[in-house]
Image (tube, rainbow, N blue to C red; front, side, top):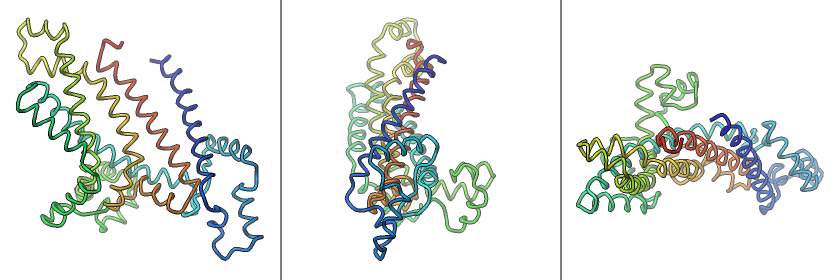
Length: 336
């Protein structure tokens, strides 16, 4: 395990720097003048030159690239053009909100998708398998914005069971600001033993998490089914049947864990994808996460913010893959 980490961590750092390099070069080719955006429409030519010097835009591109990578390692990711705040501070603040949403969605996908795949494999070729397959196909193909609007219409507008937007009720704004520990509102509510805040954050989190979880549920269900069907034909499963173990015990004890490798790999992909592509959900539910920050940055051609958010998503994706590679030998002893 130690040798694996020593080998993988430098690779992770190299890939992250490569992503930062590509993101920086591409964002520098965006149309528009960052200095003019920063200085405002009434800036004089002298003021524009001063701003270009401050932003480093007067230097040659290779020098800008080297300086950006060095600053990236040091933790200086530049200053956002539209918020006028350090990009790293902006990104980390928004990242926490997106993590809360994406992690909740992944947990829902695991809790729903794995049993759905088990049911399909257990009754392969019969009615439960057909129902599971149809349900998974529907979830995978649902347009996110449409599904979100339907949930808002049904559960927020018609039934009035859940709030339509935001991370928590406005009455808790001062409480959240004064008791923030991790930045995850639901976790902070548990740590501070604030039951009303926890219920409020959970009610606000449920609808957007369900929307984000729709695609992973269908994907995990189909991968679980395929992995289980393959594992159920292996020798150790046939031996367990010959000994006389019940089918339920065979599936949950002997077959499920070894078949989770593709599911774990897919979860890492879904995690990285969801973290950077939740802008539709975040805009729909007024969720102040990384996706909406990237959307605003693209609208204002904020190159430092776009590059910084891209690096963060890449790091999150690499971290998720590293965790999956560490967990797979735990779930499947054959890999050890």
